[in-house]
Length: 100
Length: 528
Image (tube, rainbow over all chains, first blue to last red; front, side, top):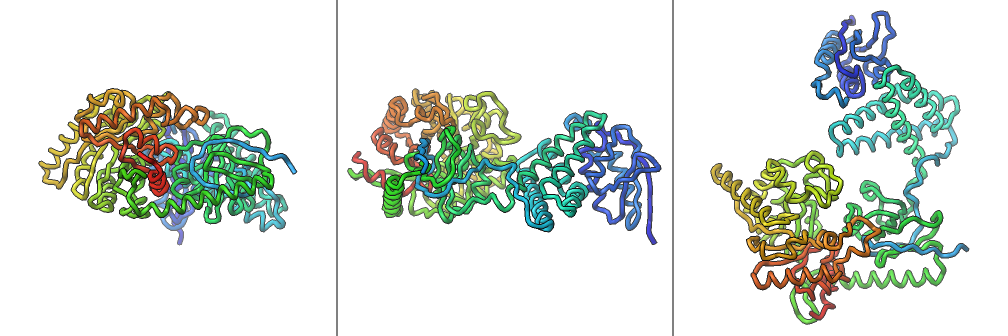
């Protein structure tokens, strides 16, 4: 059987899902076996969350409602961890935002 | 047959090299298409690998935003999504460079079209990535210099020097460059001939070149007579160097029988592994900036580095200079950016301004002192208060270690003489245990001629009467006050300057390990 999970989270980071945040995001996504995708709308288009090129191309600015879905081994953990990362502002204080 | 072309420069590492000129600056735009699509694919894969490798090497030296940008670029390069359109285009018959350029330009156009400034600005990053791979592509298979080549260019990176196989000869000829650069230091210790400051060339240089790095010059398209004369000079140099080799194991003595103490200058502790302690009288200068290369070193790292050198030297003295950052030796997170760094916050000034960093080094030195005969000196002392403050900090840290019951020892504390204020009024500094003349900085400050600027190199001479008079007075002062005076600048290892230094009264020199034999041979010719 194959697990699947889906969740949404609002991007609060000043510059959105970009450069440094996207490096962290894709690194974390790659640490899971599950297939992970992101989208800016519930009906897609969906982008491979493990590809920084694709994640960057999604161009998700601050305030975006980010849809994250996963399927396969550890799908729930993957979605939970990625939602948490976005919620934690990618572990960057507000002072990082100016140079990000 | 073209006319011979002669360019004059400055010797940064003595020696002779004869070989084809290799242009270091020919990079972009010389990609040669391959026979098959498979070869094109392999070329692109190799180029992406080279570009990724270079970025990874750079990340080790970067910090903060710079490291983040590099990490982002590496992540992009390693993502197959970036390169797959290019590989698809190669399968349809396009050469690797065109395929890569088209694929990346499409990606760049996507960013350029964005309505948000931040996303648009990322186009510059993708352009950077595109060009790095194109540069690597143009190098694949056709950029390795032939064996024995003379590398010619504006300047050369230390990594390039280290990548090059010098086993079959070759040399370095630079239009700019500096005798004080890290590459110059590496070249001297490896015995690779190097000339800097050749200036702009009147024509495109190529073909057979004769590099005379003893006198500082290069000849292109030489005549037969010139080649013959060059080979004669080259073999005479080798003979002198071999003869000097016989001096290495013996104490340095002049023709008149005057003994001269010869110590060595080192930077990286591992350098001592290649030196026989019996050939020298100790370490006259151990630089500590190299420990401070990427990050501020902790106490244990420093302690181990100092202890290694002290144990190697045994009973012989090891003089360690506290960190001399600033000037032309920036340390990320420690030094400050200044308009005129040679006259700014460097050496002891910086250490006193950053006591939390300095105290770590002081504790490491106090602890290491029990493992040999340690002496410590402060760089860039200009007024005696600086010496007093630094010495007081040593006393405070000693008290801290004593309270904690940690084994330690207070070394003699001396000063570098490189700021003219010390050389002019040495009696003010009689509290110091010893003086060590830093002739590179003393000369550049007395002559107001930067040592890393080839255009004023003719002014930057330790043999200028003004500099020599200061050195003579210092030697006499030391003799009178029983304060040891030595010299640890480049002049000590320069055969042309050694007679003047001994005539000035110095009897204690510290030189680069590679110059020890030649310096001893030069001393044997002096009649002081």
